[in-house]
Image (cartoon, rainbow, N blue to C red; front, side, top):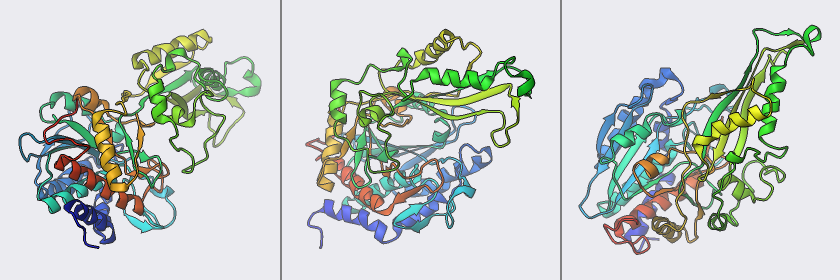
Length: 471
């Protein structure tokens, strides 16, 4: 059927990029760049991704591009791009990251390799297809569809790409502080993270914070025979597990008062009510986490503690000896309403009160602060109305993502309302072997973003007039 209006024509143009192979080909080009920011030997590839994969595409779309050195040593390069159309139009800032975690080449299933895109089983497979190359490609192609159909975006657009997100977004906060005028906008609309359900769009307006640290017990050099020295030498592993066990109870409920948030208000609970979490990925353990909360409240409105890794001795070849050293890598995900500056001092006081002075706390670099925007913010209503116009159904709306993003750079430093429209799903295997994106999700996301950009440029996002800014 021939579309009866230009908006429908733009949506069909974007959605057709999947069937034509355009999206697959462009995504394959991006995935082929081995942009592992955790691998120092790939530093040149981080630069090549920006200069060879993105800059030509953006310049062809009418953007003026600028490369920037990272303000912090060891951080990857940054790219800004600006398309100015007219005074009085709203300005939308977009964001993406081109770096990925380690490829884990030898752990992918047969027939797959991380830096070569594969189409199979209704999915695109490859490192970065979900996090984050595929997501910012969808947004760029959606802009292309609007420009091709309308001849313009109808708004002013700014884009920021970084290459250090997987190492904590090193330098991004300082870069935003130093470039407030360059990045000034009315709203951030970007894409990262997963949808709640793959078939239905999701909006979230912030993220939980993340604090990573190690608990270390380092008592002596070497190991000593467990028969000759058992009962005489303190066991680092026992001290370590005692420390970990004291932080939560047997179902993972946090015991440290300063680690328990105060921001799960009736308004937040109402926003989270009825959100679906079952059906994708592993089954939720009903007897884990804060007992008085729903699964959605635990994931999006509360704090959670996890042990990411732990070791004492040589687990692969244990011997009858008491180790002199034990270590665990731990993480606290926390929401707005948690005093991040009080977290480590509170942990130290807690361990000391348990008689565990021998347990050291070693901080990891950096911390992602928690951020949140009210679900009834005007820009949220506008974006949600556009998504519903495109799909025929209201999107899932979250006050914040359960994971962590450098959203504070945009919400706190730049002072922007922040709205994230994710183009992945919770079972995408990001940060793991076999990362993938469902093809149907990509097609849906291309239409959703094209409709959103079209409506912003038309001044028809829930009645928004051109030039109107969010209050």
